[in-house]
Length: 328
Image (cartoon, rainbow, N blue to C red):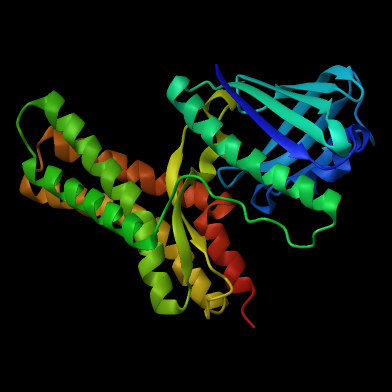
């Protein structure tokens, strides 16, 4: 289990600070806009035993989470635990203490345990730390009446150049592995074949988005590490597993119309379907009877079927169709 403690000092009476953080309607204001926090069900103010259900985005994918208040000492402490979330365990304790001259110290203690293990826990804690840095800045702004809100510091981002170079290297490694096949050692061939498929599937997707976007007038801010759209069909314990690269669109700088956005969105799934299939066909031409050829071709076909079924529902093909609908 990973633990994070974040402390901030606020120029306000303790009772006022406690009222703000225990009013669910303030959630959308307090947390980053990128998280798109929306209260689905909650009382007007929290109390011992109260439940609060939220819809929010984690690593750019939507989740519904539910918390329960298991500790409540007004105006000193409130403790919540997650009873439905993508984490195995989640607890959040707020501790408030009065200081002289009208100041209040607020300490947040978050303890999490994921289904994915300690490494993922440490990465998640890093992300959560950024979220609470933002929350504390907004909390101070609400109290002082400042109109200008702080910017949320994204976690796990890369510049467009760095992300493109990484993608190009990944594709190059995939092609290099393809050139090694077949080794005539079945187990080794299967491992290398899967590596070829994964690298050509994973790294072509967003690079295709970027290149076609540049041609059609879509501009981007940066690459980020996020979750795949397939989280919607995965069980709870696996929802944080499908890590992918993503591109943050800069809509203010983009000149593309609906058709341009549609072409950009379609480029990703087309590339991630056709690149592995092309490698499989090339392998079959070179050595049609090898284990590697059969495996790579089978996996590539399965990927195409899955993408054509899934992407029109919640993936990039759906986004492309919606973009075309906005033409004119």
